[in-house]
Image (tube, rainbow, N blue to C red; front, side, top):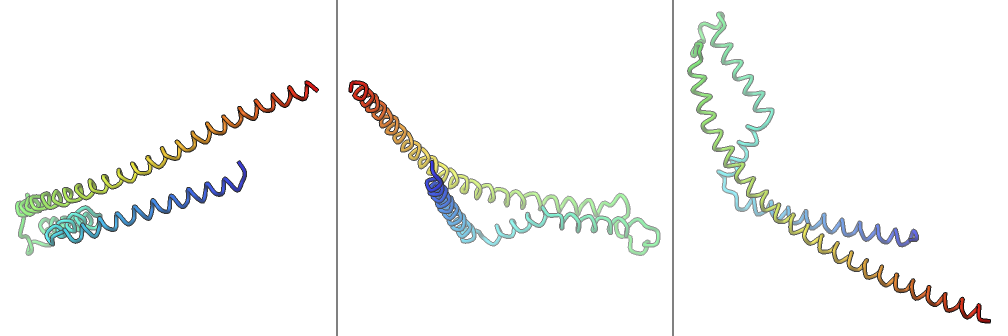
Length: 170
C-alpha cells in the first residue's frame, strides 16, 4: 500500500473519530439540558449536599468542628464554656441527627445519578452498536475486495500461464 492510500485511510479514520466525538458531545449536552430542566430544586439541593458531604473540604471542616467541640468541653481552662461534658451526649445526638438526615439525602442523589448513568449507558450502547455495524459493513467491503483481488490474481496467473505456453510453442 502506498503512502497516499495510507494517508487517505488515516484522514478517513480521523473524520470518523471527529464525527463520533461530536455526536457523543451533542448527546451528552442534550442529556445535561434534560437533567437541568427535569430537576426540581429539592433534587438539586440533594445533589449539592451529597457533593459537599463527599468532599475533603467537608471532612476537614468536620474534623475541626469535632476537635473544637472536644477541646472546649474537656480542657480545664475552658471550664466556663463546658456545655457537653464527656461522654459527649449532646455531640452523639448531633452526630445521630447528621447521619439520619445525611444518609437519605445522599441516597436520593445516588439514585438520581444512577438513573442518569443508565440513560448515558443506553446512548453509549446505541453509539457502540452503530459503530459495530459500520465496522461490519467495512469488513464486508474489505472481504469483497479481497475476493475480487484473489479472483483477479488467479485470472492473471492463468493468463500468464497461457502466455508462457504460447511463448514456449513458438
